[in-house]
Each structure stands twice: as structure tokens, then as C-alpha cells.
Length: 490
Image 1 (cartoon, helix red, strand yellow):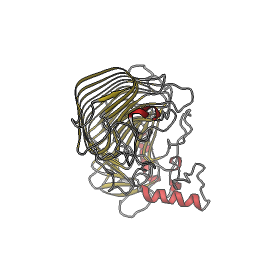
Image 2 (image 1 turned 135 degrees about the vertical axis):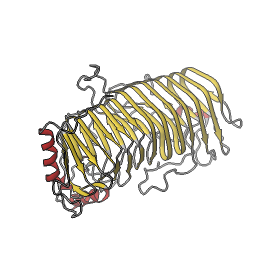
Image 3 (image 1 turned 180 degrees about the vertical axis):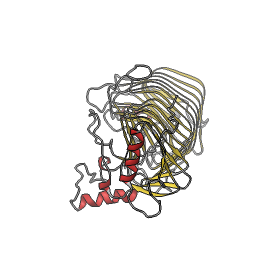
Image 4 (image 1 turned 90 degrees about the vertical axis):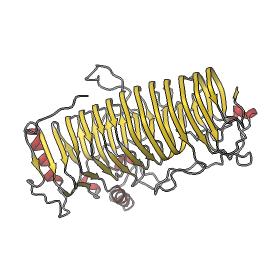
């Protein structure tokens, strides 16, 4: 990727702006005026000298570079009235979970760099609690307030970053902390580099690390992420988007490279979905280390009509993670049928614990409300719409065992009773108790298991594999634990 370099035609520092970084005053207006001035003068750099700065929403402009010296911290204001939102293109998704407000905002700009040795801290917990208080006192009512979970909706909680339809963006070498919502969010952006970031986003609910929504030509490299929700998540809210400026194509998620990252999460580490309206293709995930993650290492989900075609995941090493692989093709968006095909996952090793892997998190993802034995990995389509052409190669998964018929029991003669859950939110626990301990595969045309080694640390009465309505299966050098049956083919 080629990123703009402005030669620092117009540079200014916070010290020159008269900001001491010591008085704790809100400096939104001063910082915004400096950003606007730099852009109007053809581009340049705003340097944050060492110190602590507090701001509400800052709008980034084209040809602007933000540089943070060592010891420079930009804090998000805890006053909800200090934030602004951006009207974005309407979608068919009515769940109202894609907020368009943030501490750093960018609307259809290009050539922007945010980097340095400092930190951006959203002070998300206190900000979210203040938003909650305003709702309950009637001063700022949230029309979509989540009464069941007792928290404000995502629409009224600011993110750390929100970039909308931007081009040629570089975010690198920074620390990000504590959003009231998602962390770094990019919607319909192109030529995007997210490099060497340290992200800790576990202050409040929906604290994703990085969200890429209908983006193209993206590299995410060398990031360390500790998030209360999904670590790195690709989403699609837009069935179509403007033609790509690089290749002229109209794919909504295209040419995505995610590599050499370390992730901890109280949800899933790397996920495609859940929002899945457009398309995902040419996605490559590699060299990922995962630990202490509640849900899946890799989750790939088309449930709103998305066309997912061409995903390669390789060299994933996970410890203490609740599920290894979850592939789901569903249909919760009415009549829209999607597809999930041509997926390869190889060189993956995962250690599944018996209990919760995220027990040390302050915010822990909700556990299921039914009795169950340890869950297997799942590859599941739906009737008359199978997942197609999946390759699972060089896979090593260690399962805890300790399943008992008394805790939960789905015998093989009742395999047909496993619910389809066609329109349900996708998650590896969505089917309830499953009849296998290693892999549960249903409604699939073409799946290859090659060099797959599954082990049990304790006994499990279920077989390692259950295949139901599966065609074109290939098993090459598949070694389940010797104490269990090899597989059952329905």
C-alpha cells in the first residue's frame, strides 16, 4: 500500500497553541481549529506534546497528520454532550448497533495519519455511566435503551475512532484505551493500514477492538488487542458500495490482510459477521496468537445474505479459548439467501478449557442458559443452502472431555432433533447440546479434513465427529482420540 506523505508543509504543536496539557481543561475547540487550519493550508502535522489533553469529538480533515509524543495522552470527555454524530448511508439492518459518533471522526477524507508514542483514552466506563444517568433522569432519553441488559444502546455511546468512506488512512504505533463502545471503527474505507497498535478496550459493553465494515485493501499488522467483545471483526451493513478506487470493483469487504496479531477477548478473537449484508472475499488471516478468549478463535458467519467466498486462515495458535472454529450460514434477514464457500483454515492449534476462559475479565460475555457438555467446533449451513468447499488442514485441538449423559444427552439416534435455528443469532452454542465432542458438521457440500488431530484430556461418551446432510467429505490422516468412535455419518 502507498500512503500519502505531505512533507509537513504546515506544522503546529499543542505547545504553540497554548495548551499546557496540565490544567485538565476541555480543549476541543482549540484542537479542532488547529486541524482545520492545517487542512486549509494544504496539509501538515499537529503534534501533541507530552501532557494530558481532554476533548470531545474531533473531526479529522484531509492531509492531516496527528503525531503524539511520548507521554502525550488524549482523553475523551466524560460529558456526553461533547460528542457529535455523523449521518451515514441507511441500511436494511434495523438492529441499531452501528454508532456513528466517536472521539476521532473522519467523514469522506483522505490522506490521514494518526501515529506516535502516545495514547488515546476514551474514559469509556465513566462516559457510559453518565449516558446511562441522563437516560434514567429523563434529560437525554435513549429510544433504544436496552432494558433487559440495563445499559444504553450502542447508538448513543461514542467509539474511540470512526472513519466513514475515507481513503489512504494510516493508524500506527499508538496505544488505545477504554471506549464506551467499539474501539477503532472503519466504515466503507479504502487503502487502510492499521499497524503495531496496543489496544485495551474492556471498560464497558460492546468493547470490540477493531471493526472493519465494508472496507477494501486493508492491512492489520502487529496489533495487540485485549477486548471485552470481539477482537478483530469484519462486518457488512451495506449490500453495495461505491466502486473501489483501486480496482473498480464493488465488493464490500475485499483484499483484507490481518496478520501477526495477539488477541485476548471475552467474545471471539477474529470474526466475520455478525452483520453480514454485502460480501466478503479475498480475506487472509495469518500468524495470530489467541489466549483467554471466551468464544471462538475463528468465527465466519453469513446470516443476513452475505456472499462469503474466498477466506484463508492460517497459523493460528490459541490457548484457553472456548471454541476453535465456527462456520455458520444462516438466514435471519427474511428471504435473503447468502453463501459461505471456499474457506481454508490450516495450521491451527487450540486448547479448549473445561470452564470459562475469561473468568478474570470484569465484563464477561453472557453464558448460555441451559445445561450442556463441552461444545465441539461447528460447520453448519441450513436446509437447501449448504456451506460449500471447506478445507480444514493441519488442525490440532485439545478438548477437556468430562462429558456426562446426566448433564446433557443428545444421543445419535436423536441427531435429527438438533434444532436448525435458521434465523437465530449465530454462535457456537446456538444449537444447544450437540452429539459430538470434536466437530459437528451439517448441511455442507464438500469438506476436507486433512491432518486433523483431536485429543481428549478426560473421557467423553460422544463420538469425535458427527456429519449430518454432508456430501463430498474427505478424511485424510484424521486422528481422533483412540477412546472414541471415529465419526458418525447421517
